[in-house]
Length: 322
Image (cartoon, rainbow, N blue to C red; front, side, top):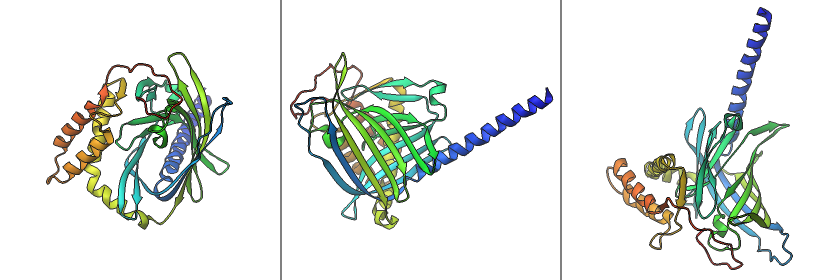
């Protein structure tokens, strides 16, 4: 009996060591996505069941992006993205939070609506949740999966529902939900975000696929000095955007349902929050308490707690509520 107990104890101890090693390998892969990158965005529609569907032109864009860890805990990494244009112009871009064995998800539904879902302990075991946020730190999508480290390959892949991408959000109304398969792969030159997307027409009764799409966002590492303007910009503006993040965390924690208006008084939320940031960063000294109060009031203007009516995607290109 004593021998069996020792063996069982050894197995448990070994499992704990292996678990810790895997977690550290996961964190190392996430951190590998940090640095200064030349980014190439490429998207192409590939297939549709509808014989009369007219494929849209391919999309491509390029940029310079600074990605860095802004917060780190044992089970959490916050990665902030900043765009650099014309060498010195800096634009706050999207954010991704990585949480280990997280059990709380915001699932996208439709019309800029998200609902909370709780994962079981078994569903969350060993997984990392990637929580992706817009430029104004409002929700975008959240997916969970395990990192894979095998045969020299390091990648993470999940499938999740999301709003229309920014490149089509104001241009397309023939679909209203995107089903994204996100695959983040670490490479010798940086990393690749590979996407297999389905553009979904969601109605009250069913989902149908309009067209499939392939995406490839290639991050090629360049010298960090090319992103020095972004690093300096964040030093000046970080306090305000951490406050925005904090306010959003509180609002999401308090509500099981998030519904965002696209515009209020003909202004988008990011426009209001960016302008507010410029205003408060000029105040000396900067007051976090006052900033958070103003931020919360601004975001609250865009929140509704009632589901929006179902709308049907049309064949036109005019923007609807979603």
